[in-house]
Length: 212
DNA sequence: ATATCGATTATCT
DNA sequence: GATAATCGATATG
Image (tube, rainbow, N blue to C red):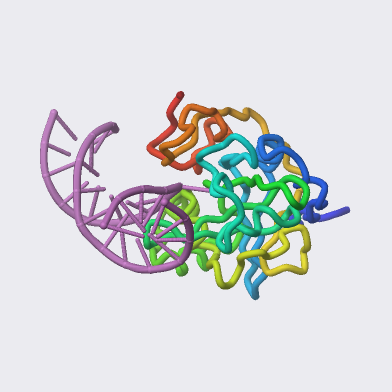
C-alpha cells in the first residue's frame, strides 16, 4: 500500500509543449508546478499567466524585433526569459513557438506548495497565518523574489529539464474553471483577453476576486 | 474598501 | 530623456 501522504511524482514538460501559440501554452500551464531545485525545494502551482504573442502584439517585448534583452524569446521554446522592470522587480516568462519565432507566457501568480518558510525569507516577510501565504507569490514581481529569480542567474534557463535549477513540472493536477481577462499593467493592446487564471483561486493577483 | 503615488534602473529613442 | 508586462505605502470613503 502506497502511503496516502507520499509526495506526488512530478515530471518535466516536453519541449514540444512550448513550441505552440502562447495562448494555448498559457491555458495549459495553469495547474502545472514551478520548481526551484535547492536543499529545500521550492514548489508552487501556476494559477495566473498572460500570453504575449510573437506577431501583431504591440504589448510584447518582441514587438520591435530582436534585441540583446529579448533574444531568449526568439530562441528555442521552453527557456526562461527574465526582465527587470520599474527599477525594482524581475518578471519570469517562458519562451514559446519554434525557434526563430517570438512569443511567450508571463507568470503572474502561484499557489505555494512547499518551501513556504524559505520563500518568506526571500521576500523578507514573516508568516503568521494562512492569509500571509498570499503575499509570497501573488504577483509577477513577488513570485520572482520568492523563488530568488534574477536575470543574471536564470535568464535562458531550460525550464524543460528537471536537472535545471528552475523548471516546470506536471504532478497530475487538472485545472478547472479557467477564465480569461484583459492583461494587467499594459497600455498597448490592452483590450485583448490574454490573461488566464483559475477562477476563484485565492492566490490569483489583484484585489480580492473580481469578475471582469 | 479603492485610489494615488514614489521608488529605482535597464533599455530604447 | 522617457518609459516600463510592479509593489508597497499612504490617503481617503
